[in-house]
Image 1: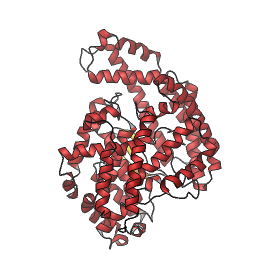
Image 2 (image 1 turned 45 degrees about the vertical axis):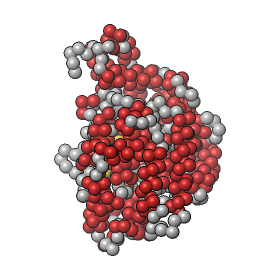
Image 3 (image 1 turned 30 degrees about the horizontal axis):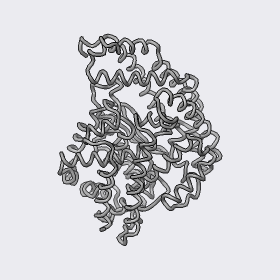
Image 4 (image 1 turned 90 degrees about the vertical axis):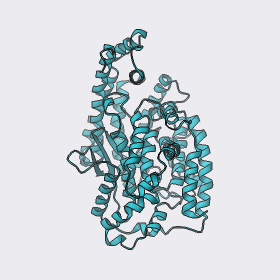
Length: 511
C-alpha cells in the first residue's frame, strides 16, 4: 500500500480484516452444522453461532471504527484515496451505520434462532409436518421484522422488506423487482405454453435410471475439474460434500460446495454441482490483492447467482457441453447409461414442464418459482399475510402460476432452507441472476463469438477467463446495477434473457 495513504485508512482496513477472518470462520462452522455435525450438537452449535455473532457485532460496531471513518472522510484525507480505497471506505461506513443501529442482543438471538429453526426445518421436512416448523419460523420472522424496521431507517428504504433486499442486492427496491418480474413473467408464460403444447416432447424416463452413488460422486469430481474448481490436488481450495440442500460457503482459499445424491435421479446432483461450482469459481477468482478488504467480496447475491446459473444452465445444459462430457459421463456410470443417446439426453435435461420443486425446475419455469417466493416475502413483511397463512397462499400461487397441486408442505414451502436460516430478501437474487445472465451472455458473445465451439471440444478455460476478467475481478467495486452497466453497457434489461430462452427452446422443440 502506498506511503501516501492516510494512516486512518490503513487502520480502518486492519480493523476490517479481523472482522472478515471471523466471518470466514463462521461460514465453515455453518458448513459443518449442515454436513458433519452429529444431531445432538445443535444446542451447542446454536450457542457457538450466537457467540460468534456477538463478536462480529462488537468488531463491526467498535467506536474506533467510527472515529477512523470520520478521520478518513475528512477532505484533506479523503482526496488522497483512489477509487478502490474510497469504495472500501464507503462499504465500511455502510456496514458501520447499519450494525451500530442493531442491538447486540437482537443479533445474537437471531443467530441462535436461525440455527434452531434450520435444525427443526430438517426434521419437519422429513416428517412432512409444517406444524413442527411453524413456531420456529414465526420466531425467525419476528426477529427479521425487528431488524428490518431498524435497517429501513438507516438505509432510507421505502419499506422494511426493501431493507432486507438491500442486504443481498444493494440499491435494488421491491418496486423495481416487481416491475422487471412482471415483464419476465409475461415472457415466460408465453414461452411455457409454446413448449408444453408442442408435439415434440422428450422422454424423461431416461433420467430415472438408477446410477450408483459412488459413480455419481466420481461424476461430480469430473464436473468440478472441468470448470476449474479444484477438489483433488494437494493445493486444492475446495470440497464436494453431501447435505440435504446444496449450498456454497467459504472464502478465497477455502470455498466448499455441497450436493445431494439420489440413486434414481442422477441428473439432480450433476446440475447442483455445476451450480455450486459456479458460485465457487466466482469466489476463487476475486482479486487476490483485495483479500481481507470489503471490496474483495461479490457485488451482490444476484451477480453471484448469475455466475452459478451461467455454469449450471447456459454452459451445463447446452448441447455443446454434452458433446464433450456425454461420453465421459457414460463411461463413469457404466451399464445403467450404456444405451443412452446424447440428443435424447440433452432434450430430456431441458424438458419444459411445470413442477413443484424449485431446484429441479427447468430454465423456463425456474423464475416463476422465484416470483412466487418474492411475492410471499413482500406481502409477509408488509403484514398482508401471516406465517400461518403461508402454506395456503403458497399452494394457491403454485396452482395459479404453474398449474400444479401441492400435496404436502415438504414439497411446498418447506422445500427450501432459506427462510429457516433467516434469508428473507435473498430469493429475488436468483431470477435477477437469470436476467443478468442474458445481458452478460450477449456481451460475451460479441467478444468471444466461438465460445460454443470451444465448449464442444472441452475448452472451458477461455470462457472462465472471460468471466474472471469481466465479472469476477470487479469484486464489490460497484453496486449490481452499476456493475451490470459496466459489463454490458446497459441497465437491467429482461429482453436478452428472454431472447436467449426463445432461441434455445425453439431449437429443442422445433417451433
